[in-house]
Image (cartoon, rainbow over all chains, first blue to last red; front, side, top):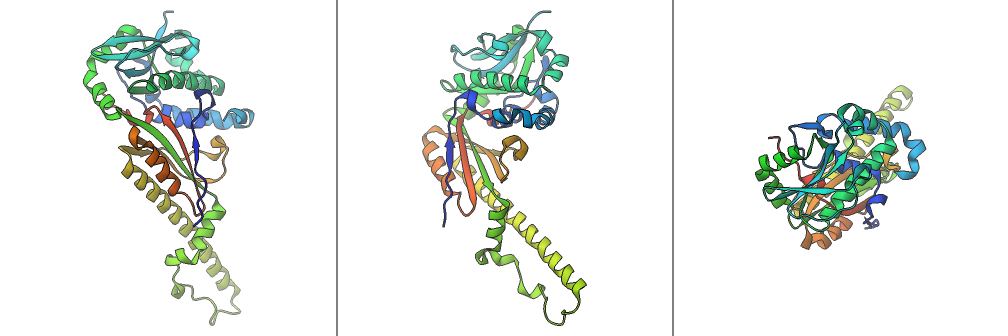
Length: 64
Length: 263
């Protein structure tokens, strides 16, 4: 059986792909409610940001 | 307009950190045996309305996400840490201190759950061609019954029927590929979750975002005991092959495993 290479990536924060970061920073993390001015938990910002990123992907392809 | 207080993470130890969002220094607020990592942010930029507009700006979003991650990562590298979701902003430090007191039990539970563990990301990809090749492999042909494909006999000279049969066979083939790919992803996720303390699946990344045009079968996050990290990486590698490529990222702060129930 052929084994495809599994690639291990341990990158400094500034080189982590934005798309990988957003998976975690938007979907996870403690959600602390009450007295908040704004938390990403309050709105479907995943959607907003993806729309933004998609609209800009050609321009910003380099950093993704 | 007074500054607002941006919250990054909650831990039990006070450490010095890199600068945070908007380039401001990070400080700590200690209360109820907990330590909150915060920085001041200008209300002109981080109030509800300006923030909604800023989040539409990819440069701003990228910069803020990286600054947030830099702080969380620095704390999590040294001590047990509960990361807080991106852009969690309070009116002032007093509100954060009050939060630590009010939710100290819940924070304690979250911190206990992630103690001695790190998060690992595992993504599995296949290409449509590789998936189709696997589905066509005789070893995997369990779903294709010869009896149903009653082509040939007596059908010659009826091109309409032949066309419909080819079309049905094509649809069945695609459905079969899709089903096998989903089963493979479920299998990988179950195997990794069995070794991990916890596992969850993030939505597959859009190829336009990730820049990869292969199919992402799995975008998983796993909370793994530090002592089992090597074993986990080895297992992840073994679950690849046969046209499936596995990519492992980490260790991450336990972002995907610190979700707390609302008070």
